[in-house]
Image (cartoon, rainbow, N blue to C red; front, top):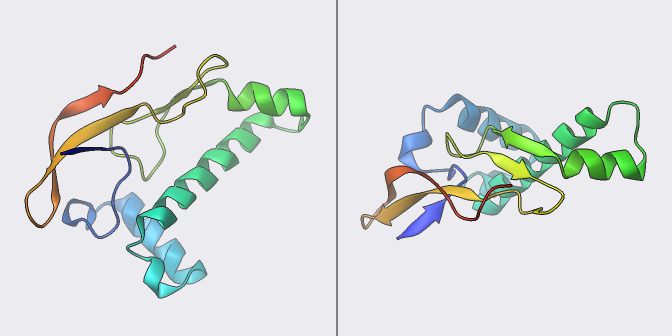
Length: 124
């Protein structure tokens, strides 16, 4: 058993997922072929999207103070490669971005989800 918060490239349940298709198209254009099923590449892609979102929220005010304010005040942000229902929540007092996940069991071939999204640590 494990907890999963990020869609896993190559997992059958995401074969027809639009966001996974967009991710794989991005990789096809910008990355070596062997990275298509690499979960660390999916993680990096998600971190880059989070970074872009924070910078967008900064607008034209790219000061250190505003960057920290925007980066530490994120509420219920759903990023494309995150498991549906799993959201980013960051507060000045709790900077752990990924505190939700779904539980899954390995069936010998794939991870199979069960239950709803759980919160791993208390939200602020």
